Amino acid sequence: MSLLALGAFLVIVGLCDLLRATRDRVSATRRTVLIGIGWLLVLVFLLWTGDSLGGALLLGLGMGLGLTLWVIGSSAALVAHALEAPVWRALAFGGLGLGAAASLLGAGALEEWVLWPGWLRDTVFATWPVADVTVSAGAVLLQLATGNLLVRLVLDAVGVPAITNEKKLKGGRLLGPMERIFIVGLGHIGEVTAAAIVVAAKGLLRFPDLQAGAKEGPSDLSEYFLVGSFASWLIGLAGVALIYVA
Image 1: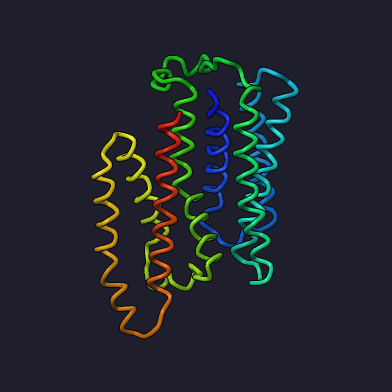
Image 2: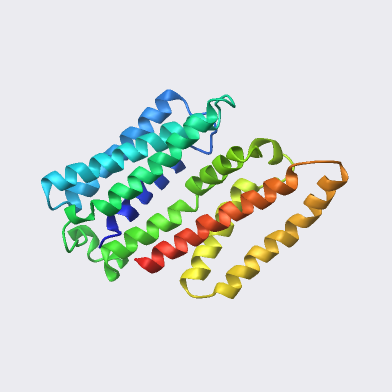
């Protein structure tokens, strides 16, 4: 049960990131709407699972504030000036860390046994415990838009801007989530070897692009591919670990 709140936080973050419609520049109005939706989902979650009023308020505050910092920081970091971007990236990563820490530390504010609402108890969801489904959903949503944003922030942090290299390695925003979902799915059922084959296959498929880029002269294309790939794989492995721990 200790990971229920963390799973819910990742679900909320993942859903809000999907609503960005893969835009780098997010307007103030869209950010406000995303944050409002996030806080509403946090409230619904606490009304459903909360036990202690005081603890639930603190938990909700931590989750909501973490989401707010992530949305604002990650949106600004992708379009900010080079001197300002590190501050926004720190704010974004700090928001995720705050939300995750609050979710783990505030788990005691939730009911010991959370049951599905009556209208869901006759569905396939009722086959599994609430916590397991929530954590699994959070791990999967982490691999989609949120995973792409994390990879882009990491690339910008090491000085290999994604926006430049995506013109040469097209399809990264789609291939990355697909690859991470494969890793999570195969890792969850214990097929680690198959997951390793997926990783190796990506390298082989990208090799012609990397080789062509190298012939054109000095380029950060290889560094972009390596850093981006390892960051993406780590996010996928984090999802596998989260499901296993739950």
